[in-house]
Amino acid sequence: MAHGGHRRVYESLPGCETECYRRCVLDRLRPIVELGVRRLAGRKSPYQMTLSLTNRCNFRCEYCDLPLNPLPEMSGEEWCGAIDELHGGGMGRVSLIGGEPLIFKQSGMVIRHLKKRGIHAAMNTNGWFVRDQIDDVELLDVVCITLDGPREIHDRQRHPGSYDRAIEAIEILKSRGVAVVTMTVLTPAGADNMDHVLAVARDMSFKAFLQLEHPSSADCMMPMAPRMTDERISDLAKRLLALKDAGEPIGNSRGTIQLHIDNGRYLGTCDGCYAGQYYGYILSDGTVCPCLLTHRQAEAGNGRRLGFLEAFHQMPPPRGPGCSCVPTFEVNQILNFDVGVLWNALDMTLRRRDRARV
Ligand code: SF4
Ligand code: SF4
Image 1: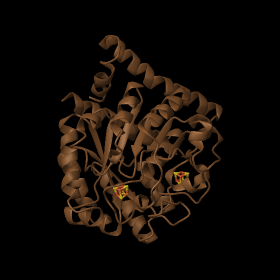
Image 2: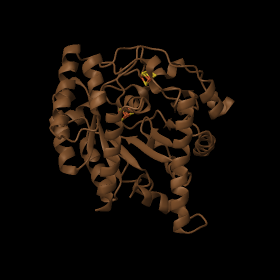
Image 3: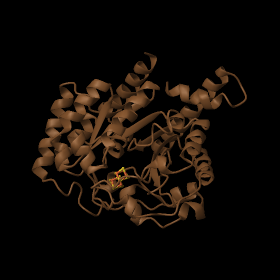
Image 4: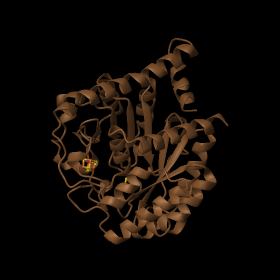
């Protein structure tokens, strides 16, 4: 089904369906080959980029200050230009993020442009606008919806009525054949209720990722999971591993859960992280930085001024004690050729394809 999204976009281009498939495969393979060559040569490559379309959000979640820090926004056309430039430099995967990315009026233009270029495209969304923008959202390869626990916990931490809209978004996406995962932010209340999320994941057939809350300022110099003790975090990680071993639909790989067991609240340090080397983050104003949690270390606006590829290559390495960002460390482990984490990622991809065929 992921391919169905490509087909819908490619159909508007000259050529037949065979040509569409050939282009699709070549578009996907080229950046992976380039990444492998550059990884072996120890050279930078913007293989996976997170594009933050806006800091605006219709929610005010208790653990997130992003909407309180408005930033200028690039236009859809500027994003398309940045995508072309980075794709030419080896970008093969993109995550669209915010704030709430679907609040950005030209998010559909950005999604369609990514798919026209054959780039693997994901989105993190609170789910609220999915039903209104499904014709664009269904073109994505995977959509990650935040689901923090039972209705009363989710709505209290995030936004009144948001639990029902998140579940509705998952239903709509699945009915259109789009791959869905969820992300649960493990706050003290959410951590007590992860069984609820896993029960929903079992019922609705998706994988649930769980992650400790970040500091609300999104700055790695502030402590991760500030409201939880080390003992609580260690117990949680052990429980998560036991649940995964028992076959619960947990997206986190065993390797990444083990990092929490070994290292506590930090999955690893900034100097051992590939952010800034093989992936990066672009703020809505064009700032290029290694990741959201190190964005204050970046020089503002440099993507628009220098060009996005040049800004990526000039970006200094991140500094800091590290973080608990699960998606980042899943990729770090893969780039370190961790077979277990690679298998976890492949398993999810294959299962998605199986479901898509049903
Ligand atoms: S966590 Fe996401 S949904 Fe909540 S306020 Fe922040 S950007 Fe908005
Ligand atoms: S460990 Fe990586 S993702 Fe985490 S704050 Fe440091 S550079 Fe960013």
